[in-house]
Structures are given as structure tokens and as C-alpha cells.
Image 1 (spheres, rainbow, N blue to C red):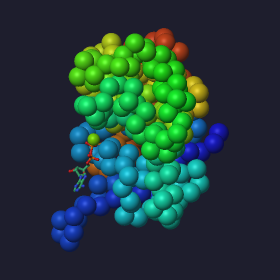
Image 2 (image 1 turned 135 degrees about the vertical axis):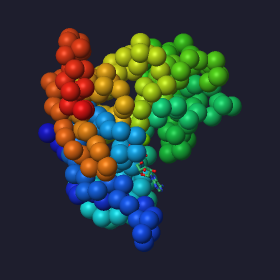
Image 3 (image 1 turned 30 degrees about the vertical axis):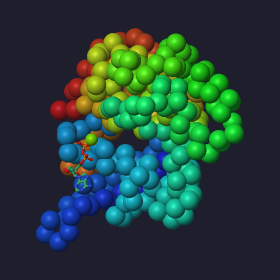
Length: 248
Ligand code: ADP
Ligand code: MG
């Protein structure tokens, strides 16, 4: 299995002097190609900070993060933004979309930065992705005219436009009803089947139960981990139960 991310003894502190606090307190994480993982833990335990560290969004105070073997704190500014743009996708609770652009233009916007000439190809790719996630008919819709679930699908399309190695999702289903949330999880599951790793931060045991490995954080540390077989559509209740027991 190819290792995509290797975080080794990551410390991230905020504040100075007496106020200094390790929000990540020696976290080690590995994420392999196509792996579907999640991070759970109480609010303030460091989940988002971990995601920002692993994605090179924020530098770490000590320890290191290797992305496909490259030390993110040692690469040049250009290489880092290259990796972040072409190899990493992000999905947040509320997709940040530009209100004056329609759905498809929002999806292709980040890809246009590098390939201005290929607009036809890029649009075609976007249409294929939109079809796959069930929003093909919405391409010219204003972003204010679609549901939260549809907007999140568009956010996922935007995140996978460049065939990233990994997608980070911070509470990607947090604003959705449970049916939409399940459909979004189906999409993530398909994405991992194609070899893209997905790491989700979630409060929801039902969401975490769909993944294959759940890391539990507390006070800036990963305190335990639960491995589950790949979800085959059956016995979600048992998986949720396992997650819930481990959470306590
Ligand atoms: P979670 O996502 O698990 O809710 P976070 O990773 O967002 O937690 O935050 C963990 C802790 O780090 C919180 O106590 C938060 O206040 C603190 N924190 C996060 N970012 C900053 C920052 N930029 N400056 C100072 N403190 C921060
Ligand atoms: Mg958070």
C-alpha cells in the first residue's frame, strides 16, 4: 500500500510563555492510498488543527509531515502550493462558493488557474463528475437555488477535479439531513474505491462508522483507534455501536 501521508510526532502549539498550549501534543498518523479514515473527538480536541497540519495548511511546531515522502516543512513555498492545489482536496461543512458564479463555474474555478486554455476539457470533466454525484442538471443553477446536499455534492466535485491523492473533509455532512449525509458518504466511499484517500472529521458516529479506521482524539492526542472492515452496505447499526462504545 502506498503511503500518502505520514505525520510523525506532530506538535502544534498556540500562544506564548505561560499561555502556550500544545493543541496537538505528539500525534503520529499514517494514511495510505485509498484509505477511508475518520477522526472523532470532543470539540476543541484538535481535530481541525490536525487536518490543517496534515494538509500543509499550517506549519507544525515540531515533528514532521511527509506527503508522499516529501517533508512539507522542507519544501519550497511553490512546491507546497503545488501539492496543496493538485494533490489535496478539501470539503468543509459549508462549501465556500462564489455567489455570482453558477454551479459549474464554481466547480471549475480552481482548475482554471493552471489551465486557462483547456476550458472545454475542464468543463467536460466537471460535467462528468456532476453526473456521477447526481447534480448534472444543475450546472447553470445559481448557487442560492440548490439544496445544502446539492451544494455539498458540488463542493465534492470541485475537490476531486484535479484527481487528488487525498480529500480532507471537516464535518462535511454536518449541515445535512441524514439522508443527504448518507448519500454524501456513498460518494466518498466511491472515491476511495478509486484510490483516493479520504479523511473525515466528524462528530457523528454514524458517519465515522462508514469509514475503515476511526482515530479518537482527546486533548491533542490520538488516544485510541478502531479498525473496521470496508463497509459493504450491511449492519451499519453494529458498526455504529462499536464506534459508540469506543468513544466512551
Ligand atoms: P476541534 O476541531 O477538535 O474542535 P480545533 O483543532 O479547532 O478543535 O482546536 C483545538 C484547540 O486549539 C481549541 O482549543 C482552539 O481554541 C485552539 N486553536 C485552534 N486554532 C487556534 C489558533 N489559530 N490560535 C489559537 N488557538 C487555536
Ligand atoms: Mg473542528
